[in-house]
Structures are given as structure tokens and as C-alpha cells.
Image (cartoon, rainbow, N blue to C red):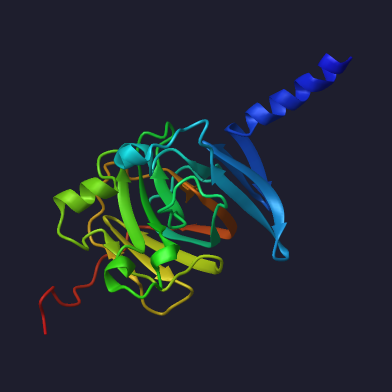
Length: 247
């Protein structure tokens, strides 16, 4: 009898890392190498996720190859997002104890994700440095990357400084509203309903142009998400508003 009671518990634990589905409101999320649950947090129901280090190990000596990978919660309701708006409210905490001392509360969005997780685009935040008293550190508060060929270190090595990173007035342990406007090869990020964007990707580097949307956290981050809104739109024509270097 004791053995029969133990077996279902083991099965539930194993599902937590491999394809578990969680429903928040009318949206369903599939967990990819993250653990997660729907909880009450600061008065609201939210999706809480953390990277599953057993399912996808992390090595601080191999940062480029073991971060910014298949650890996210996929919104399964939309599989053909190409252009439009993605908006979400998110809250980043660093785990205590932290498995990685330099952790910055990595949290953000994946989009245009292929069905097999082989490619996607991403913009995410490092809230720990968003309002730090050091401009060079602030300049790393926002990160774009394109999986698999253009992760953060590759972008730093191959492109001029600041091409795919930037600053944003964000911090740990507070709600952040992130809104992405995706249009063709460009992406624009707005923070906390500000009128003007904080960050622009002039040319995204991924080859996949359509797919799923996901909620992302990385090493040592506990992320809380709510109020995800995805609006698909047709490609908009760009307006010429001056060139770099114009006065």
C-alpha cells in the first residue's frame, strides 16, 4: 500500500520540468525546462517560473553556451505571431541563496519561436543594473539576442558596443510593464507605459519570422508574470524620421 501511494507523487514531480501545462485565466502555458506554478502574489494570480537546473544545467565557465536557451513558458494559444504587440507585467527576484553570484534578475520575452525550439528572437532585462549608479552597467540593462547563432557574447564580439544592448529604468522586486512592438526586422521596447521607447533593435538577426511567444527567466531568477497580451498586426511601412548623425 505504501508503494502505491508513493508512485503518483513521483510522477507529479517529474512532470514539473517536462511539458507541464499551466492555465492562467484563459491562457495556457507549456513549461520548457522551467519549474512553475500559478500562485497568489501581491493580491493577483500570477505565473511563477524558475529555470530548472536539473533539466538544463548551467555552467558559469561556459556562459555563452548554457544561458539564453530553452528555459521559458510557452503561450500555446498562439503559434503564428509575426508582427504586432506583446505586452506583459513581470516581477523579478534573485533567488536566495543564489546559484550564481553575478545574477542580475534575467527576465523577459521570447517571440517567433519555432515549434521545435530551434530558433527564436528575444528581448530581456537585467533589472539589477537598471538604476545602478554606474552608466556602463546601466547600458547592459536590456539585451536582445537571436537563438541559436547570436547569443549575448557573440553580439558583443561581432557588433559595435550598444548595438543590441541598452538601458532602461527598471529594478528588482517591482512590477515592470514591458511592451514590444515587432515590425518586420525591427523591434521596439517600451517600459512602464512610457510614451517613448527605451530600446530599439534596428535589425533582428533571426531567420524564423513566425511562431510562438514565451515568458523567459534565466539563472537565479524567480519570475512572476501576469496580464500577457498579444496582438497580431500586418507589417507596417516605416517612416523616414532622420538618419543617424543628423543634427
